[in-house]
Length: 123
Length: 108
Picture 1 (cartoon, helix red, strand yellow):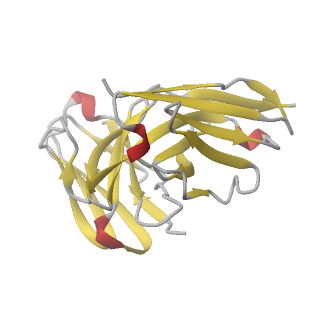
Picture 2: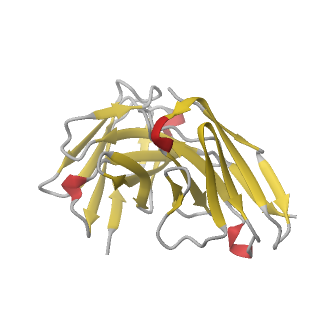
């Protein structure tokens, strides 16, 4: 069964750091781009970061640039999000998601999602 | 950055009716790399449509996607009770892979 399981979310103080993990199973992890998507309480979805299957490409939303770093360890079949200089507005449920390909080189959307992990930033 | 604007914000409909949701992009989304997701309270999003018009695995044929360039539409024919939810469009043509703000389909 294809599955993603996030962990690491907790209550953290403003200015603090946190590392989220996403353990994958049931698919060839290194073949797929992955992403982190967050949802603040009562708000919509916000794409946070993405990374290619090899890890050679990554990008972040402007709202987290310079503070968050996405990475992956294909030998451990795990995706990470290092979050530094946390702010109250980073409070959200963080989902990891798998990007599938509808054709070679053509992204098809995020077809597998984890259940989410909650990050609360408070002073 | 491609900005996606969804309309309307809320759609109030009865079961059996049809829903038409719009997603407009600030610049052209090439290769129709646009998807639609459904999200219910307390759940992760679920991919409904990819490539603007292709249904994801297991999605019933009452869900249909159309459009190209900057204008895309999700149509839900014959609304079932389980279809009342929030729907998001997302472009993955260019990074950042942005989402629209969502359309809530509620029971009238």
